Image 1: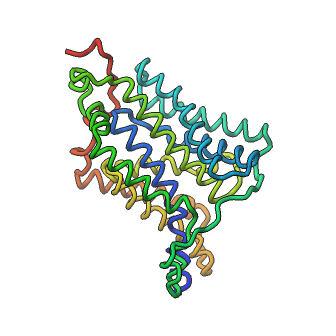
Image 2 (image 1 turned 30 degrees about the vertical axis):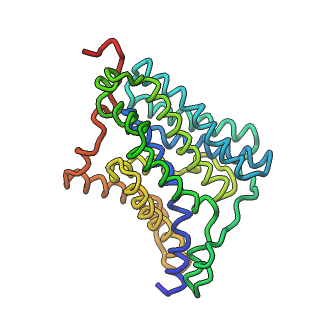
Image 3 (image 1 turned 45 degrees about the vertical axis):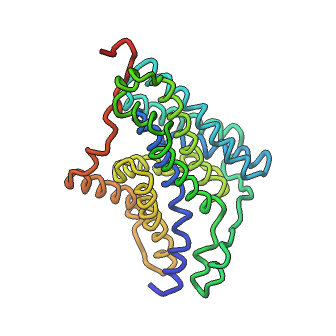
Length: 310
């Protein structure tokens, strides 16, 4: 590839990586509290729909992104009620949430006539003085959400590893019986983790519709939520490793249009399956290397009721 194509590839990578990074980070928060979240694909669609709807109505990207986060959190209340209080199997509840959100967003988007409704978005912000570098300066001209993603990761990583609240949340995910004995309200902490994590997953979806594509299409997340689920396992529930993994997947996804621009002809279905093939390869690598088991929250996917405490 020529230098210009490589530069365009690297410059576009963050735009593709941000949805993976934010969705994976949201899942890490929820799963660190012991709640297995397989509904990321559905919550991303809710965030994408709410974000574009708010953007069409108000034209304020920042407000649209916030409302998308709130919408995803609101929908996640249904999931939280099922798995925390009703003790529904978390795998089944997560899959049901995806199918529910897919149908809901397709219906609402169609009735509201938002499909293919183009809107304005967030422009590029230059990181001075790095943006002045000859040639490579283009790498430092990204939208505001790209620059905001790093502080979000910093805040979440500090919260999970350094703050007393983060340690309580992790205790709930590791050993809810011991946490309950220490006076920690397990159900409320799990609820808070689900809501906060879902907000970030919704933000990931809104990024796609409001910032990246600037329009709504039914099912537009294209399986990124499922890839984020695999990314969390690859990252061993570590925010920073998840960020690195998101950049890896972003590089792969950003490479496809650059190859097309360079005249490389690839079969359509091969292009469509590439992210999933990479996800499968990562999962096999994790399994064969026997990594991740020691990092998995001890009570992940396990319901807890106070009366069952011994």
